Image 1 (tube, rainbow, N blue to C red):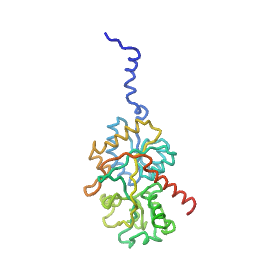
Image 2: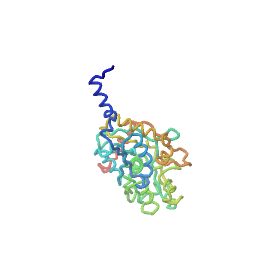
Image 3: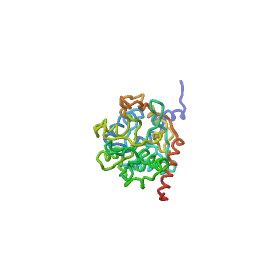
Length: 306
């Protein structure tokens, strides 16, 4: 007859409780998404990922949204959410707000192996505005102060590459609040030009709005494009358990293969996109340091009144 020692017995009893690890303390996982499009579409696009993570991780998963980018940045800074999908500039804002207390792990990977996108400036095709020079004295809308392609990159490039300060070049500079709001404002004549994003000439915010029937095709034209921007990362709070960060990261990484149809909805896949997103690739903080530096430069410029 084999006897079990008291120590071994206690270990066996404790095993089920210890097996859950981080899930004992985080029975609800909350992830934030930015306000690049209207809330209904944001939630619909991310629902397959939410369901998949809930089933895969075995914890409740909730989506956190806010009216602007800063709401999600504040939420992760205040430990109200565990993870967020940020644009590059919003990640840099969160990195700065938390003194480096966030960890980027994944970004989007495209079919050709690239992981970037572009800032663009759009105008009505019938406006006669064909370039930034033509927009001098007009009303220009940026998207959100924490938007990479909707503010930081175009603002930075207008000064450093195009040779003008937006506040002096345009007659009025304002914020539309989101990329869709910017495009809608141009269509309606509220703005003459606006900053937005696109992945390529077949896929971007105004092309998606055309596909959804929000605007008619042929109304909006691109008049400027930035250099390629590194796609924003899935970002975790650094004060989370390391095994939690890795397990959630691995689950998101496996999402495209585990649920191909859900991933297509999440990534806004279309049959005519020549270079669709196909999955994720690992990233670290070094990849986004130039964005952190750019934001710091912009703040310094505004502080000095330059």
